[in-house]
Length: 484
Image 1 (cartoon, rainbow, N blue to C red):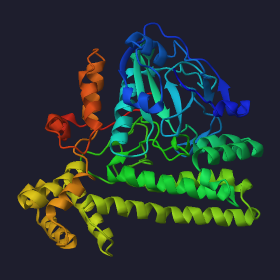
Image 2 (cartoon, one colour):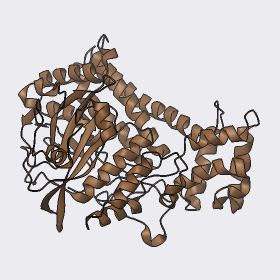
Image 3 (cartoon, rainbow, N blue to C red):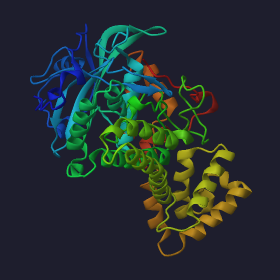
Image 4 (spheres, rainbow, N blue to C red):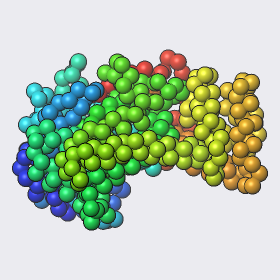
């Protein structure tokens, strides 16, 4: 059924705790991602909904599973916690998919583990649906991300501020190894554990580095590059992760943990949605800096394994941290040039992009529609440009942009390229909340429709046109929540 090959379970026992999912009373399948299951090579043809519900609730363990909770530490809002670990997540095991990629299959909300820290290890329905929607939205946008394989309602309540339906989410990832995993061993002075983890990560995620002279430094540089590219992709679609703690930063370079995350509606660089981010640490514009800060924490863990002695290791690690800014800027410029239909590089591009973002902020314009509307203007005329171009300052920018585009390519070709870079539909906050509210009354229609739409976000499919519309003032969602 599941062709497991569980390499993480073969690491020393201090890397994890073996634990079985807790049984639930009456699991019921909400949604199963059959296409992803096929990609993973799972043999589930002929399984009915009851069997799938039992499987993805943890009530029925597939043959070959070696369930475990991973150990890790982490900085949470800048404060170091030496032991966190999977408090409500259980890794069933790993499969090698049809493309030869090793993938984790993990249950979230499957019961207590040794890392639950007095929690119940369960998940409420709302956060499960949010993670399903947003992870599939990120995949549809082409951004490296964990994936949603299944969502199951448990048939049992969970108690948060109030009593809520319980649910279980099945997550797929390249791995669940985080910066915090390295911090777990570094905090204990366990250099042997750090070396084993480093070797494992390189073999699994960065095999080209296996022959590197200074493997720890090479790994730091490679992780920095992937994180810079990832965060630049987030910024290009107006995504705010909301809780970029080091235990939420994967070594593989995938987006993970969609708790208080959100996509921008009206643009502002200091926008914050997370209810627990009272100081704006993880605001939209702060994400690159936090990425660099997290890489610095990884560097601290890897220093003892770098070649050339302590002073040389510190110098080399600092050079990576300095380069992170250049890495991010390179990826950010590439993404935003593409969003504006620009080819090649021009010294004025940075100012042109920043001036457009400033226009969006000044006029409280919608981020997604602001960019999407520009492509319509190319084919339908300036009258089809976003409404903000009725403003004098925006009209001046629009003229600069058209001059930069030049006349070497037909406008229709530029418009198509821009439509492929600027989504028509995103997983807007108010739509997610509508889906969750309806699901609390056992109506999953909105949820299924939203998942279907975000799977093809660049297609101007008119059946999803209502999902492309920004919220009215009374529909705006000002705060999102962690769900734990």
